[in-house]
Length: 104
Image (cartoon, rainbow, N blue to C red; front, side):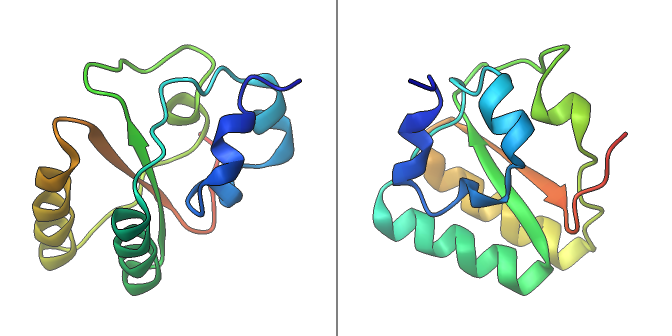
């Protein structure tokens, strides 16, 4: 069984390519409650980006999403909205990835 299978209960992480989903340790990702996930999807759609929520204190791994995929470049208003949303995450970390995905 894939240790990342807990993420399949989330509507957030369908953007992660199969290779990375099946071979990376994604245990630092958080599955949010349904309301927060819906808000994430709204932000993704509005700013044409992918969102991931990491556990508080998570550091980038040598073989992880942050070292594989480029972050999104947000305009000031989008950045402010993402910062406001991150305040709802109880210290967890919001990362916004470029859409379409771009590898480093």
